[in-house]
Length: 71
Image 1 (cartoon, one colour):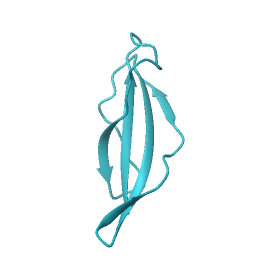
Image 2 (tube, one colour):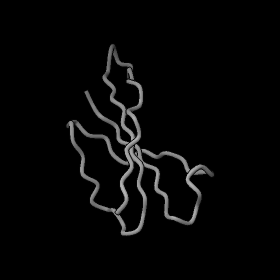
Image 3 (cartoon, one colour):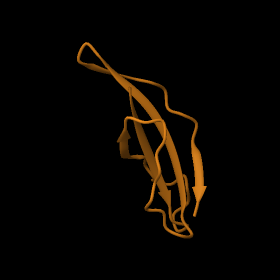
Image 4 (spheres, one colour):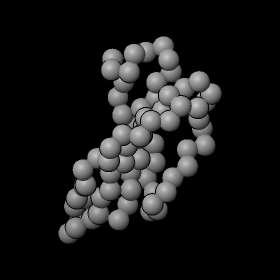
């Protein structure tokens, strides 16, 4: 199973609910991930989902609850 990590970044300039979209930042074969590119004063929000290949097609899990981190 592979884990896909999504991120939306809030820089303090743009209100959180206006036009911010999630983007894929990593795909890992692990149960942990460390984002080493965090900038001070920025709010980061993460969510993940897993997938596995079944008969050549990807089957996705539901998204995880959102996790927020402020650096």
